[in-house]
Structures are given as structure tokens and as C-alpha cells.
Image (cartoon, rainbow, N blue to C red):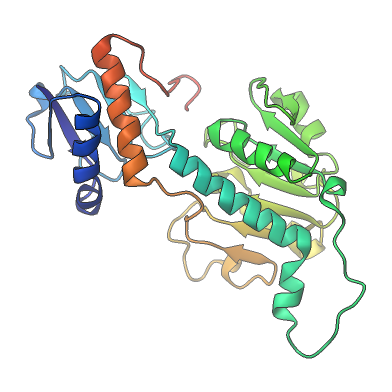
Amino acid sequence: MIRVLFAAGDEAWDSYALPLKAAFAAEGLTADLSRDHAPTVVDYIVFAPDGPVRDFAAFVNTRAVLGLWAGVETVVGNATLTQPLARMVDDGLTQGMVEWVTGHVLRHHLGMDTHLAGQDGTWRVGVYPPLARDRPVTVLGLGALGSACAQALAGLGFPVAGWARRPRRVPGVARHAGADGLQRALQGAQVVVTLLPRTPATENVLNGETLGWLAPGAFVVNPGRGALIDDVALLAALDSGQVGAATLDVFRMEPLPPSHPYWTHPRVTVTPHVAAATRPDSAARVIAANIARDQRGAPLLHLVDRAAGY
């Protein structure tokens, strides 16, 4: 019998309890899933940063902490967390992100807002977008989500460049890496999608200088992390026309305060952190499969590099 502590909120328990139990059974695991195990008997923790566990020191026999979220920036620096930490990499989460990103990139590319806002009886002829092959896109971040989005956009015909802190190979995507590669990746881009993790090295990666490297009137699409963008610089770039529009799903403070200028800016679309949700059924299968690997003596998947922060 393995004991699994579910360390997330009440609402999450209602969504995850049955899928996790079914996934454990499908993997042949005899598991006692509970929210009330004593720390010293816990073998694995299913964890969300908004759950009740903040101090991991008492979990002396815990083999791994398995995150329900893709992001780990709020826990990776926790000094009490000495157990292996696995982040969520889930095909449902990835597919949701691909759909959101391609939808908003195509919305900006096709100029759909012009027609949606202009239902006033005016026949607007001569307003055509370029073909996708003539609209360069840059994806910042080539992890599981970034790579999937970059390949989906390349499949639609966009010339896609990708940038990561470390070199990564993504078929069909021009690769750039490191500080020197950032300018090459952004220079002349007409669309930028930000899917980097939040680390000290990525904070404000889009700022006054880097936004100036984009093609005039470029579109910014951010489903990654709010801190990737210097908000003051983005608002200035929108006002000057250097950035033509921005769709933002993540923010430094969430919910975004009603007084924030993003809400009323005519060229900003705010979505409430909905670009990619973790689906309980598919996420439960990921967690159960990872525990089963560990029980067989195989290495855990999706382990977080503490030094890198993701």
C-alpha cells in the first residue's frame, strides 16, 4: 500500500479524487489517497501551490512531490522542499494551450477585430492580411508548451523562430538560444508568443528595448507568465504603435485589478488565465504513471531543475 497525500484545495479534491483513484487502479497501484495522512507516512504528495502544504520538512519518507500545475516558480525556491519535484506535463494541458495560442494568433493575423468592431454598415474593402508565410512569428520558450505551439503555427504556414535559454531542437522552427540569440529571434517579428517560465533571467524579457526589435505594429500574445513583460513598456509601445495589439492571459497580480490600464486600453485583450487548464482525467493519468515508474525503479519524468528554476 502506498499512501498519497492530496495537497490542493477543496475544489480540486472534488475534481481529482475519482480520476486519481481510477488512474491508480489502471496502473495496478494499491494506493490510499487522502487529504489527511500524517506527514511521516506519506509516500507521494500530489501538490498545488494554492493548497495547504507550505512546509515539507516533516515529510521525511516522501519519495516525490508531483505538481498539478505546469508552473513551479512559487515552490521551487522553498528551502524545506528537498524531495524530487515533478511538474505537470499533460497532453490535455498542451492541447489546450495550442488551441488558445493558434486562435489568438490567427485572430490578430486575420484582422478579425476590425470586422467584429466595425458592424456599422460600412463595406470595408481592400483590407486583407498577408498570407501566413509572410508573417514571421517568434515563440519565446521551447519547452513542452512552447514547442507544441511553435510547431502548430509552423504547420499553418507561418515562418516560426523559437528562443530558449538553452539550445533546443524543434522540427520546422528556427532555433535561437542565449542572450545573443534573443535579438536575432525578435528582430522583425510580427507576432511574439511568450511561453517562458518565470525566473530571474526571464523577468521583463519583453521590455522597452526588446519590444523595439519587433516589426512596427507587431502583436504580443502572452499565455506564459505576467512577469515576462514590463507592463509600463508594453503600454508605451501600444500607445506609440510599435505594438499593434496584445492579448494577455497572465498578469503579475491575479485577478487583474479593475483599475489596471489593460482593462480599458483599446488594443489590449484580457483573458482570465484560461489559456491552458489542467484537466483532471488526463492529469491524473500523468501522476499515476509517474508514481508507477518510481515504484518500478524507473526515473521520474518531468523533474524540475532546481538551479534553473523550472
